[in-house]
Image (cartoon, helix red, strand yellow):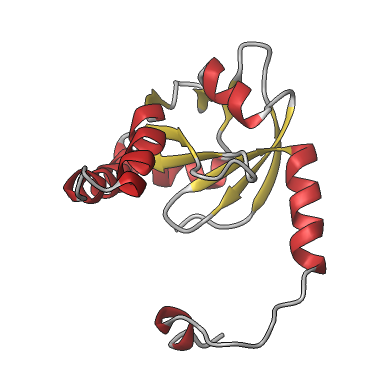
Length: 153
């Protein structure tokens, strides 16, 4: 289970040092093998980082979706089409591929956010702007989805 917010630096080659608190779990869970892809929203440009076993489960579900549906084709093209296999190196770093770094606008300072079964990697600037926007939003009262109705915090 991955949680928390980490502000990190990319090195000049585009490598990211995985925080030590996650590294052992990732090495144990997927032998340090990760899949990095872009998210499916143009307005929230970040990368999604999955341990390989988590990604394979998602990919199986995506592949089973009907290809005649335009929404499904779009989702497959974005998520599977950009999925890139990466390994944690002996120094605990992962190389973020150039095209994915470019998509997410990643420069030197990045933010890595745990999302349970995956991580999101944001540019520090974009993360700060979105976080502030989300914190200032008020939620309108209205019907909740079935999944949210059953959630008790």
